[in-house]
Amino acid sequence: MLRTAIVGGSGYTGIELLRILKLHPRANVVAVTSRKYAGHSVGEVFPSLHGYNDLLFTEPDVSYLSKSAEWIFTAVPHKAAMSVVPQFLDAGLRVIDLSADFRLRDRRTYETWYQAHTAPEQLDKAVYGLPEIYRKDIAHAQLVANPGCYPTGAIIPLVPLLHSGIINSQGIIADSKSGASGAGRSLSLGTLYCEVNEGLKAYKVAEHRHMPEIEQELSVAAGKPVVITFTPHLVPMTRGILTTIYARLAREVSIGKVLVAIKEFYKDSPFVRVFPEGAFPDIFYVRGSNFCDIGAKIDRHTNTLVLVSAIDNLVKGASGQAVQNLNIMAGLEESLGLDTIPLCP
Ligand SMILES: NC(=O)c1ccc[n+]([C@@H]2O[C@H](COP(=O)([O-])OP(=O)(O)OC[C@H]3O[C@@H](n4cnc5c(N)ncnc54)[C@H](OP(=O)(O)O)[C@@H]3O)[C@@H](O)[C@H]2O)c1
Image (cartoon, rainbow, N blue to C red; front, side, top):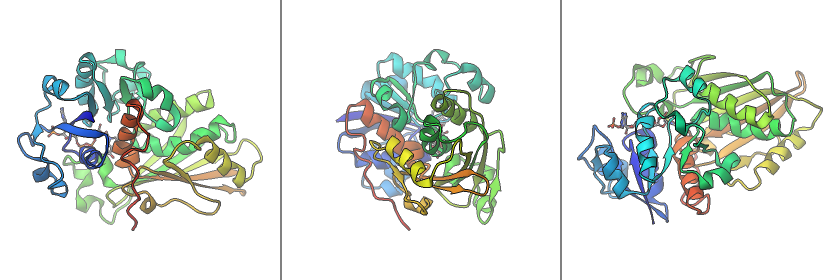
């Protein structure tokens, strides 16, 4: 059994890790931290896990965790992650970090969008944890930087098409709608029920921190710098991200060929489902699962390819993807413990 610990287990990605790992046949959670709930049991804090997990939350004590576990999930906010991750690495543990702290390879880019980096020596050692693209590197990594939720939904559909030159690398527009769990479980005015329910708004227009992460990965796929227009929206729902992407076709191509190109690229990726012509994803079809669903249509009027992707932000956008990375790092089958059917409706 893989002995794992979760730092920041009382948040939304933490409870999702606890839920997924409870049913994982080859991994156990041996420690879980929360400063606020230290001393309380998991079932007390999360009644949905009552009877499934009798662990007590502990303080995030690195030396205790390093002695208890071999694998660490850091499910804490950015900045908090970079203050503990190097200590786990020094202790010889393997880490999957769910924060943004190690996703950007370029220190200056990180510091422009976030804050000063206190562990910059790890930036080029960390492997970007998108298994569909970096599976081979993830297998040997000591530190995996689990991708952001919006980037996962935007990068997966676009990479095969940039790679094959089917779409133009310039002028891409990604428009994403997310449920409120994307903002985490801590109290904030913007995600209170009355602020979200029956509303629908764009936020951080042209300045969301996931933009440089998406551009980093699209640039690798295109082999040249790619910049995008990215607009996130907050939708009155709990989980799910639907992303609609507009890209100019670089050459005359049929929708059938576009879909085949995406399908072929992901033929060994169990969690990417490409819909047949005329069918489009819905967050209902991925809820609670690790799938990334993709649909596409060509708007002949403007010669634009319209791509639509759907993920569950807490699963493929965070904790499911983190467990997928754990499986790859441990040499297990990639889908182990993740083979769940989405909750629809
Ligand atoms: N929510 C999503 O959809 C999503 C998707 C992809 C990635 N992420 C990323 O995953 C990470 C966790 O997100 P989340 O939504 O689960 O956040 P969250 O609900 O706010 O939970 C944060 C967790 O971190 C702990 N924590 C906070 N500050 C800490 C510190 N300084 N030291 C140690 N523990 C600390 C909190 O517990 P205590 O304060 O009690 O210690 C809590 O358990 C974030 O970096 C986020 O950006 C989230």
